[in-house]
Image (cartoon, rainbow, N blue to C red; front, side, top):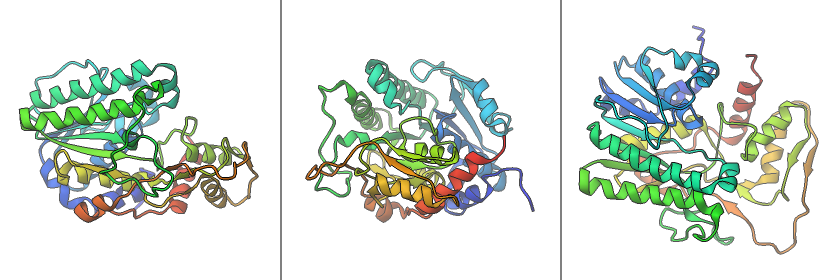
Length: 348
């Protein structure tokens, strides 16, 4: 039977690997910050899909600053009967008298531009926003709280460490203003660690790395998004550096499975890396994007690789999530690129 939702295949994939989790949400309410961003769109898409398919009679309230733009981007979500919107800033939104069983805090502008130009605003948004949302969770009677943290909490990955485990003891340079994002996320995690003891709130932490999929912005600092944009424009695919740093990308549908699973089944105050452990050089990422298009495109590399230069990596170890929560990367990179390119090439 045809469906009007172009993400139906992905949403069925999510439901197939989370179906046993949703009973906790039956007849309940979930509050989601950052609900109109990349993570938020996938959380709302999957919530609405599960709510309908499983007759959960659940409700989501989504915090946003820009409802009008979201109505243009995703009208089916903006007008969905089980989703309501609250207008406000994550740092000072008004507390309602409603009760929520679950709170997901996904509001942060993962913007390299903002981090460079206004690190204080970046820091305030993360720290004040997390504190405010935690206080809201306590007031609303929530039992479980999910923070979407970041692999940036680890600081630079040592060249001889192929995968970052959760117990890696490094961190960002606190004297570098460009560390505002990573240090802010570290403080957000610290806040999450203080609330269970004082308030009995279960706080779950997802340390997120890099992703690809529908709703990913193609015009920011995400290399794979830029490559897909270049390819959709007919090329060339432009690598701004030397192509040697190692990165990995988890598809958005798998990301969504991981986030819901960590919320419902993750251990409180125990961080879980979220991402793909399949690292490869940026130059190979560009080649993978190129391979997804029938007309092979030119790839340009702006800088020449320096012999003997230590390898730059940003690749997580996902053993904890795999062993404790049975999470897997199920949609591999080539299919992830193909799906993302198709989504972004569809007519409006």
